[in-house]
Length: 223
Image (cartoon, rainbow, N blue to C red; front, side):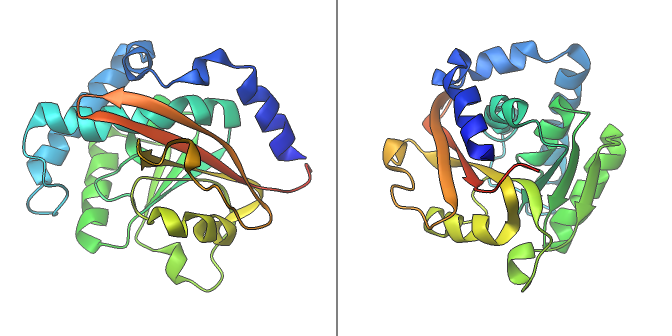
């Protein structure tokens, strides 16, 4: 089974005992760091007109929105998807930072708000992100959404509804990566519907405290 392979890969990778945001940022090349700094500036510039965030300080935007998005990068590196969909992307979180860090991966940012989707198109054009597509839609509102290989999300779906979202959006063998508060911890998704497996939960620390990232997969035979 696909998820058995993932469990083995994760369990033998000591880097994933805890997510190191500083180490991830330092591992990016200069171009990627420059693009992400510019991305933070664009969020600040359009924050009010596009209703992007309540954060009004550039260092805070960079820390909370941009850098924390990279907490999913080690999981994506292990999963090695060819395509990623960012559900409820808002100001481009976490999809845009992940697309910058992984230019070989095709990223679709899904955002139903017309104002936010317009902002995301500005970001894509300004940063010249050839691997990013903006889609003004909410697949959870569709009766039969396109099955996805990999979905990432940050707060677009309440945690109790994440398993249902995963079953609806993922194709067999697909995975959903997201964020949760530190309070959730190891008890996250203690009971899952049939067909879903929790690969793991990993903590990380940032300027505003502790949180964690999780990895769910929908079971399925390898093709």
